[in-house]
Figure 1 (tube, each protein chain N blue to C red):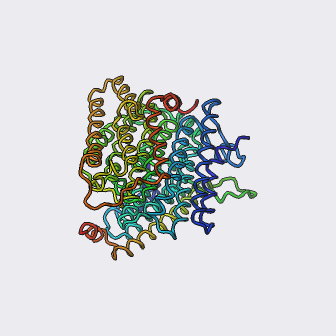
Figure 2 (cartoon, rainbow over the protein chains, first blue to last red):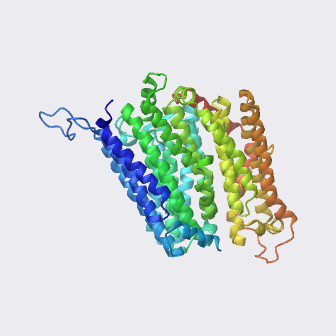
Figure 3 (cartoon, one colour):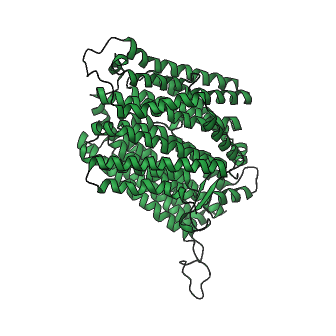
Length: 117
Length: 496
C-alpha cells in the first residue's frame, strides 16, 4: 500500500487531531469552540473523500459521461454542516452568557470564581 | 397506510414553533402538554400494534427503503417510545408550577419549545431505521438539551451546559465518523441493509480494518453519550444545575436512548458474532460497568447537594444496564432493557420529589431536608418509595430488574459480579438513608421556609410514577414480556 496515495485521509486525521488537541489543552472557551469546529470539519473532509471516484464528475446525466462521483455523502455532509453551524451558535451563545455572568472566558478563572463563593 | 410512526415525531416537532409563536405563556404550556400526551397516546397504540402484529416498517414520504428513509418499529423501539413519551407527558404535567418558579417569564415559551424539540429528537432516534438519521435526531435532541440545561437559575448551569456541549459534540462526531466508515464499507445507510451487508464481510483473523475502526468510534461516541463510567464527567454538573423539569426529563430518557443506540448498533448492525465473539464488547463493557456501580455509588454517599447525589446514582444505574449488555445472554439483555424502563420510573419519581422540594425551599442541600418528613409528607413519602425502588426492595420495580440481572450473572457463573451488584444496592441504601434520616429524624430547620406541601399539580404526576414503581414491582408481566421479546429480537440480529 502506498501511503502517499491516501494523503486526503492523512489531512483529515491531522486536522482532527489538531482540533482535538486544541479542545483539550486550551482553557479559553472561544478557543475550545474553534478547536471543536476544526474537529468536526475534518469529518466533512473524510466524508467528501469517500465520495470521490477517480475520473468521476458531478452526478448529472449528460452524453458521453459514464463515471460519476457519489453524491450521497455530499448531501449527508450538507446536513452535518448545518448541525455544525447550530452547535457553534449554541456554543457561542453559552460563551456570551458565561462572559456576562462571570466576566471572563478563561476556564481557570471561572472555576476560581465558583469555588470562592 | 398506517402513518403512526411519522405522526409520533411530527407532533412535537410541529408544536414546538407553535409554542414560540403564541404570545400567551400559559398557552405554550398547554400546547406542549397536549402534544406530549398525544405522543403518549400514539405510542400506546404503536406498542399495541407491534406486540400484536410484529414490527412495522414505514417508508417516509412514500419512498421505499433503499432510496428513502424508512422508519422501523420493533418491540425494542416501541418499548423505548413508551418510556420516552410517557415520562415526557408526566414531566409536562409536573412542569407548570415548577417552570413558573425557575424559568424567567420571557424565556418560558422558548423553554417549552426546546423541550418539545428534545422530545422529537429522542423519539426520532428510537423510531428511525436509517443510521444517518439517527445522527441527525441525536444532534436535534442534544442541541436542545444544551440550551435547556443552560436555562438553570445559577450561573454554574451555563458552565455545565458548555461542558456538556463540548463532550456531547465530540461524542456525536465520533458517531458520525463511525457511520461514515460503515457507509464507505457497505454503500448503504438503511439499518437492515447495513446488517445484511456487514454479515457478508468474510471473517478473517483480525477482521476487517474499516469495520473495527467504525466499531471503535461508535462505541466510544455512544459511551460518551450514555455516560459510561470514565466518560461520565459531563453528567453530574448537567443534572445538578439544570432546571428541575429538565433534570427529570433528561435523567429519565436521554441516557436510556443512548443505551438503545448502543444496542441497535452492536446487535442489529454490526452483529453479535463480530461485536461479542471477535471484538469481545462484553469484556470491554464489564469493567467500566462494575466501576460505575461501585465508584459512582460511593461518590454519591458523600454528596451534600441531593440532586448531585441522584445524578451520581444515575451513573451507577447506567452501569447496571451496560452490565446486562456485557453479559451477552438473553437474561442479561432482558434485565438491561427492563432496567431502562424501571430506572426511568424511579429516577423520574425521585427527581420530581427534588423539584417539589426545590419549589418550596429554593434548594436541595441535605440541610434543607431537615423536618421535611413532617412538612411535606407526601413528597417525602414519594422520595422514600422511589428510593426503595432504587435500592431494589422487593415489591418495587427496581427489585425485578436487579433480580433478573442477578440470575443472569449466576447463570453465567460470574460470582464476583453478583457480589458487586449486591454491594451496589447496599451503597444505595446508605445514600438514600442519609436523606430519609435527615427528613424524618432530625430537628426542624431553624429557618422556616414555609410549611406547605407541594401543590397538587406536582404531587399528582409524582405519585403516578411512584404508583407505577409499586404496580410494576408486583405485576411485572407487561414490561418484562416486552423486554424479553426485545432481547429475543436483538439476539437474533434484529430480523424478527
